[in-house]
Length: 111
Image 1: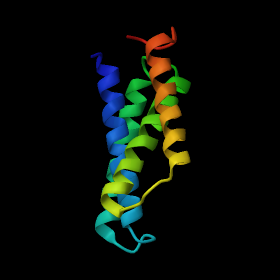
Image 2: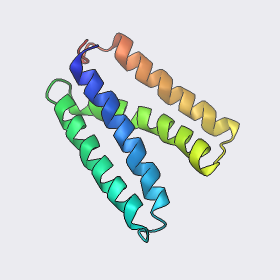
Image 3: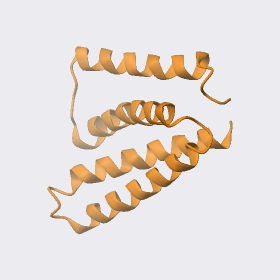
Image 4: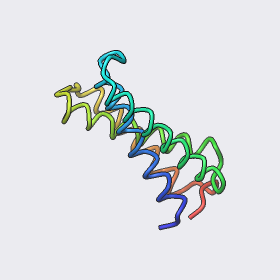
């Protein structure tokens, strides 16, 4: 797997950690989740910037946000017991389908 894809995957993972920590800050009243959120977002944006050296910004952001939506939804379910209805799950399936189409068929991505 090309290194820019590895960087993008880790950017999504750190963004998910940061967003999960954001929820845990309890409106910025808990210092440890605030610190975890800040560090995670910084790492995520740095890794996303590395990916943008090779891929167009629009595609990087589409992949980062699409995969991030799916991962943060899973984290919300596991960590905070947040459940989604069928319409929400179908919408996310369409997002995943879009990410797959971009990666398999777009000439704008680098493989």
